[in-house]
Length: 344
Ligand SMILES: Nc1ncnc2c1ncn2[C@@H]1O[C@H](COP(=O)(O)OP(=O)(O)OP(=O)(O)O)[C@@H](O)[C@H]1O
Ligand code: SF4
Ligand SMILES: [Mg+2]
Image (cartoon, rainbow, N blue to C red; front, side, top):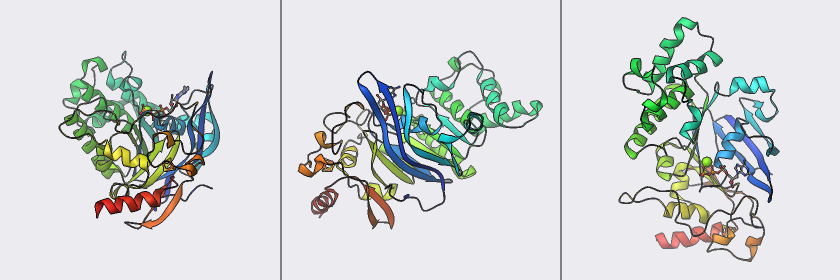
């Protein structure tokens, strides 16, 4: 049975038991394998995990941007604003995509077309989703560019993507995503392509726009610093599954899963060049060859005989700040006691 949602506010998006598999020569790649979470209106949920854990496939599943075949939805429901996106007619889904749900893609090149000016691309998004008189579209594009603090928008509006820096392109992508006033913004690694100073500005911008518009954000990141800055709640994914889930404050104060502890241990120090999460020995197993039982067990120093059975995601009850905290590890109590002893 799926554990109850960790969020207290009414859910805008509810993903329940989602399984997205890909047929490959080596068998099914179980990229997303029974994932559940929810996001309240105006809240930010961060999905974290190492490369290959299933974060992007989760995001693309919400908008049904998974190529079928080789992909397929094996189980699950994705309820947005009361409707199941997996069972929605194509035309209704098209209206939602880029309209009430917008996405900033992980690959900056995916969103911007090199042969059109950025102004034309944002205008196209507005024309598709909003009923604005043609004479007002250009002004609206300028307003969007100003909202994301693009400098000199009157000049930028007629530029092509290749005439812009990485940070500026990132802003344009955010402007395009926000141009239709989405209720939910899915941001897949929104700051990996830009340097640290620009990253901080883009995060500030997202926070301001969210406060202004009450938009919910599904933030996908490998960077726990970004999580600390923006997230209300966190879902930690490993090998296609949710292995821990809590409010950001609770998770930072009281991480329980050995994998989450490993992610915290791998936080980059300020004197080191920022890189992908990597302090945990070994790597995520291929999605076609997940081990039986706990999928983390080949990398886990706590692993024991019971870990040959798959641990369920269980609620720890009201912990810490009085919020639900869920973890999928047979030894979470033992690990918590050991950590408490170290801290004491
Ligand atoms: N079209 C596909 N065919 C087969 N396997 C796929 C396909 N797309 C994704 N996968 C597999 O699904 C798993 C999850 O991929 P996903 O892109 O969601 O990872 P991620 O968590 O977003 O990683 P990263 O941090 O590198 O972006 C990976 O093992 C990947 O190889
Ligand atoms: S269930 Fe076992 S192998 Fe998996 S994380 Fe917990 S202790 Fe480690
Ligand atoms: Mg990804």
